Amino acid sequence: MADRLDELTTAMADLTGTLEAAPDNAEVFEAICGEAATVIEGADLASITVVRESGPETVAWTHDTAYALDQAQYAAGEGPCLSAAATGEVVRVSVSTASEKWPSFTASAKEMGVGSYLAAPLWVDEQLSGAVNLFGYGAHGFEELDTKVLRLYTVVVVSVLRTARRYQQARQLAESLDAAMRNRAVIEQAKGILMAVHRVDEEQAMRRLITESQHTNVKLREVAARFVRDLTAG
Image (tube, rainbow, N blue to C red; front, side, top):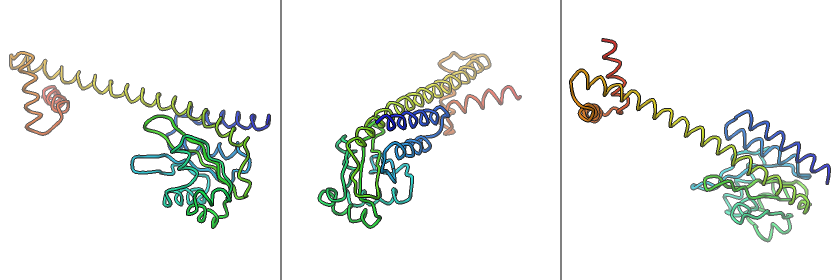
């Protein structure tokens, strides 16, 4: 057990290091997927399913067989990863049990030589949910300890992903506010020039800019920027 915890600690440290490098979502999912396969004994393959409005999608996988297994589940509309994502519970089954629950998917999995399945739900928020999926070539069906370790791993992963998403959202908000401030600044500059040159009040100056924007089908900020640029250039 101590060795397994050491492996889990190392995996989380590696994953944190990946996030600190500020990669894109694809790299984050690849790291989560790869580390999951290292902390669970008997996990020969791993993948991550994200459930979108259009349906489930595999966003990371350690081997083409893992990707093919997920596609078999989506096509059949059944399987461990779909069950974990839908119920919010860890799914651990061997090939014999799976054959009874998901005959269509299991038939495809058997052809690929896979006989053990372990999947844990991955629920970050309303926009990001799915499952971490592990597959084994043996018929061992994984152990209860594997279930506990994977559950602990996904709890930490969810926390890390939520932190990363909050950071991304904060950065996007900051960028939006910065853009809004720049837009406001150039519009105010254009208004000031119009007021001085044409001796109109602030409301009339703004109306002129809006009218030009509507007539030319050009964004208000671009109209203001062009006006300022043309005037200063002349």
